[in-house]
Image (cartoon, rainbow, N blue to C red; front, side, top):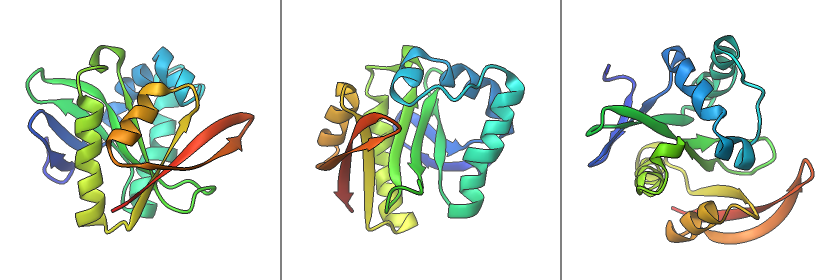
Length: 171
């Protein structure tokens, strides 16, 4: 892996910037049932659509904001696990923490480990004063992770017909 793409390392993970070579992985991840249920169906149903999505969403975030969602790689298993990082949404005042894992990577502590690492990065390198997190009301695992990471429930709001919780963490 090239050094300029590597953002962080933890005991078990390499966390790096996404690039176009990750399109097949993103196609797989974005079609996981949990991704569709909790994040949404982005209509990414082929490799070309995944490439376009990466360019317009993920890679443009690095250029425009200096941060984004990052690729998670298991050092021990030598395989892709998911994504974790930050999204700057027009309807939120601050960047929000986001993550998604492949089904076979869930329940092994990777979400917690990667979120802790990127939150430390947000504080020390990116200089964020606070980070938000949003979760659907029925995503108990996400809500529990937010609480375990120290986020506090700020309020709930409606977005595209769905009620969401908004959490805040002061760094």
